[in-house]
Length: 158
Image (cartoon, rainbow, N blue to C red):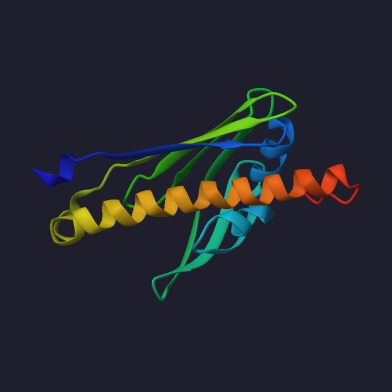
């Protein structure tokens, strides 16, 4: 039965920038539209709630959910309040020279989405994986560009 399907996605990318600086950049909600392909705005509602607005394939969306940051571990955990039971984790490892950014996403669809999954499951999986890879590529480009600018005295990462 499709309502029991859990979809998981993961991707990692190497970044030529210090791990602490990369985490500082990705963990600020106001920076999220810079690296998430469909996101237009993000802000904290309180200490552990984030509100996002965006547009995916011509459809505007508004959502909120949990966002927990652990700067000591350079880890972010988030989850949505939607019927999809979406959650994710971003973890930055590395040193003062380079980083690895790893993301895991999990979707636990409810009964309401069963028919939609039957119709679009394969295309949906490809779109989610592509979006994940695009987001990490954007993080890499931004952070490496900022690292080069920092070397020249004009960084904008954090």
